[in-house]
Length: 212
Image 1 (spheres, one colour):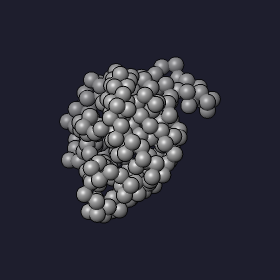
Image 2 (image 1 turned 135 degrees about the vertical axis):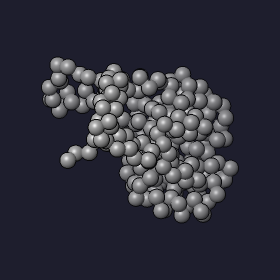
Image 3 (image 1 turned 120 degrees about the horizontal axis):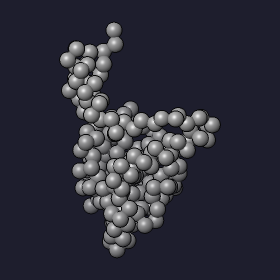
């Protein structure tokens, strides 16, 4: 599991699933949030439930690739980012059958479920026992795996479709941040030289302008 440790992400149902799971299966949780204390406590109770803490985004592909399955038990997912990232690393996905995740997870790359602790455990146990089915899904995930640019295109398409539904007029000029990385770096370097930025020694943060 990767994500915010909040009710809406289905973390409570995921924690409840551990007692129905095969004891040889290890469940890893990466993230932070209000329910962190409950996750830590459960990790002390079950040896096969492991809390990894907050993982640097740059290291997530390593964790996705090392996992046999990624669980996305959210109550609703607009885009299904975690599912897409997992498939990009050729890892099958078990997810709640709601929202945008259904556009990402199909039968050949994962399992969609009605959210409950037992259903999560049953899906995991099933893939653990049925190696043939799991291997087919792993192969499907590998074939479906998208590059970071393809993932970015997916998000962009979804964004513009949402704007169209809201009747928001599209701009005449659209600047993609990824096409201007060089200019962004130069701007940050210029601000840094003038003392208008500072560095934070924590993961996933950038130079932040100081506004006076």
